[in-house]
Image (tube, rainbow, N blue to C red; front, side, top):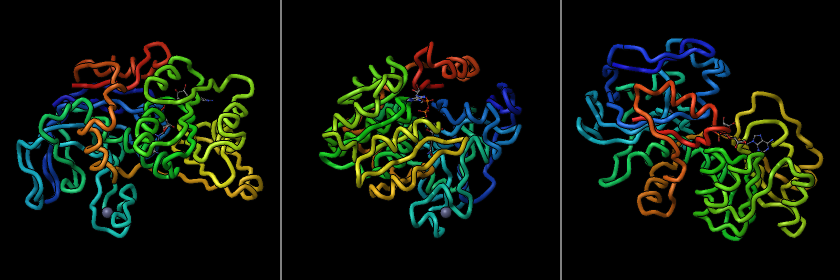
Length: 344
Ligand code: NAD
Ligand code: ZN
């Protein structure tokens, strides 16, 4: 089968690889119908993710059709259409029982990182019963791919951790796919203000189309003051960090109101400064988290009933044969204006 293989920092290639097979009773082998590229794939390609070793098939998002299942799989059979979670977790260990699938004790594997992933014709999914979801009939499979990772990430790490609630005020720093996913899913809770902050005016324009009440360019003088001014001078109840650089974490500390929450979503390669005294004296909570995809069934219903419309995140479409070009398009988003690229 064809598969996109990570061959060390800066190197990847579409190669011929052996078909995956069922190894454990809980496994399913899935024929990939749709996959996509995530910012995390770019981090891996740079060599920033040591758990991903050369030879690994990339990709952790996908929709497909069950090819074969192990004897222990009870929820799926060959021919079933499935949405794939980016994390493969047992659902039964003490961590999974607390909804922390990302730290499953019996293999909270991230596809395309610790085990072979979805940018291929077929993928092996361990713990298939708890790591796959049935595709509802009539659902748009391009859109469902966004539920493998990006939408639950914005929702779980940003909106749920940030305790977004009706009438509250929210700032989201970073209007990339993750920040926009937080923007879309925050609207499920009817906050009064959704302020999007980015350096890229084009992405800010997209954020307005996606429901931001206000947008502010982070490079503008007094950007933090403008955020506070929009909220009675106090700041926001929830500041969601969706970039992953020290300056935006500092920005969140500047715009959060007393009693508020900073929900960190970004992956920070570097240390960040905490003004702990200032945070303590203003009752600020800080949360941070890996995505667990435990919200996927709920988000799936919200998408299928058109309560949220992530289709607008899709900007480009490619075939698997063109995946290297798709990485180029996705990796140069400032010029190509790519958000999510769908690979068929
Ligand atoms: P992205 O690079 O596509 O988007 C980041 C956005 O931030 C861009 O629009 C960019 O213009 C903007 N930006 C950059 N510097 C800025 C600044 N100083 N001020 C304001 N805006 C700035 O990234 P993405 O794919 O949307 O991912 C966002 C973050 O989420 C990344 O750090 C990614 O690694 C992380 N992530 C976390 C998880 C998790 O489990 N917590 C999962 C997936 C991704
Ligand atoms: Zn587990």
